[in-house]
Length: 170
Image 1 (tube, rainbow, N blue to C red):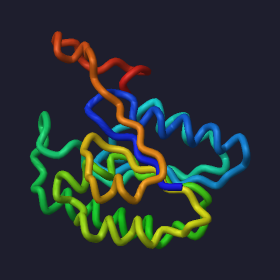
Image 2 (cartoon, rainbow, N blue to C red; image 1 turned 30 degrees about the vertical axis):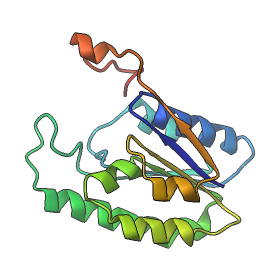
Image 3 (cartoon, helix red, strand yellow; image 1 turned 60 degrees about the horizontal axis):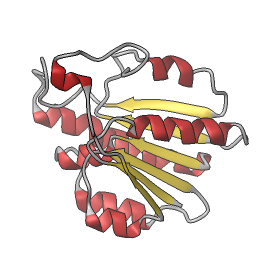
Image 4 (tube, rainbow, N blue to C red; image 1 turned 60 degrees about the vertical axis):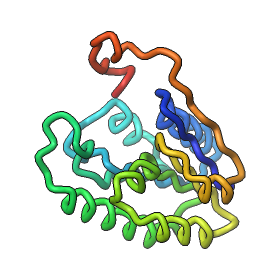
């Protein structure tokens, strides 16, 4: 199946993590690849994913593009994302489930080419499952999907000036 968790609400990565946790209970081999997110920032999911024996976790990013103190050129972000995408392509044979977290955001940020992404999705092995997350909707990708869940923001503490909370947001 091709599964998409998208939308402007919080919980897309969490949904993908839940799917990975469930699949690990059935000893499925999982690749959990995160785009944009930097290997230098340690999160709660980084710590937890290390404990799942049949899951490989990779981060292919330099941090959130254009936000906060991002001083890295766009070309460096693109280079990291493209290298990650090539790495994923070379590894998919080893896994039952491939999760590409923030992949839709990498496309939106011009880090990954939409045409390349569509070709990858169209040619993804039918006997495997692919999970894509990100805020942005692409009708071309949605048309290829079997399951699409949209996470909609109704209320968020960030809008009241509250910063991300350890264990809840990261």
